[in-house]
Image 1 (cartoon, one colour):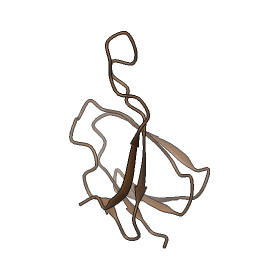
Image 2 (cartoon, helix red, strand yellow):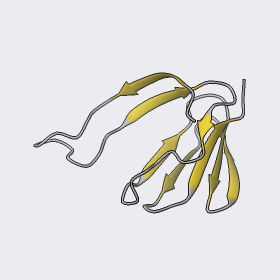
Image 3 (cartoon, rainbow, N blue to C red):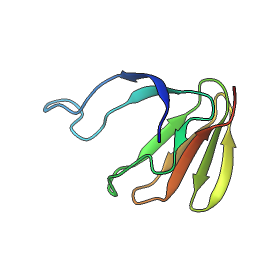
Length: 86
C-alpha cells in the first residue's frame, strides 16, 4: 500500500508531446511505500531521491537511496520501495 502525502504530475502522456512518458514527484510518508509500485510489465522507471532515505528492493537485492541517489528500473522488474526515514 502506498502512503503518499502529495503527488505532483509534471506532465502526462499527450499526443504531440510525450506519449509514453509521465514524470511525477511523490512524497512518501514515514514507513510508507509499496510492494508492487508498477502494474504494467512494459513500464520502466527512474527514481530520484530529493530528501530522506528510500529502500529499494530490486530483483531480491536491497539498495538504500539517499538524497541525490537515483536508479533506473527496467521493464518487467520485480521491485518494491519503502521510506526508511522519518
